[in-house]
Image (cartoon, rainbow, N blue to C red; front, side, top):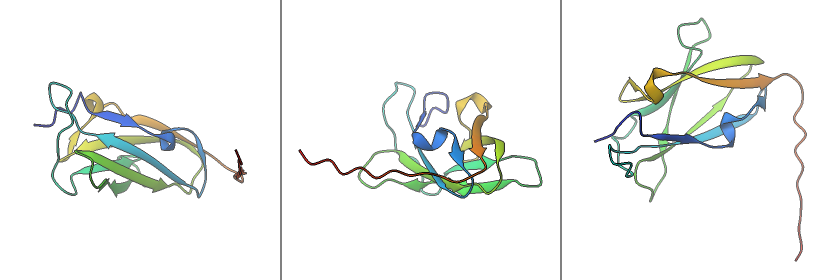
Amino acid sequence: MVQENKSLIYGLGLNPSVVGHLSTFFIQLKDIDGQNVEGYSQTVSAIVDPESEDEMKVIGTRVLDKVGLYKISITLNKSGEHDMLLLYCNVPLNSSRQIKKVVYAGTFNEHVYDFNF
């Protein structure tokens, strides 16, 4: 059984990003003993800017071959600080605490490095 307060939220998509660029992070569902546990399909989601006129719901996708791991990918088109409420079966994860997502205006300078060893 999923324990909402034990589940793990991680990934680079939680870091500040730039308007119009994809941000991806992961939610690992855990049970009361901290073990990975499977959820039901289409049950992990994020609500961005809840209870505002810009509210947006994003459904997580299950990562294949990983028990209870879901990927959330969002693209925000407004700069500023956004609140995200993460849910499992419409029950808030993280003790109902919202996560802050910072999005900057401007362009994104992505470097590609090629290392030859």
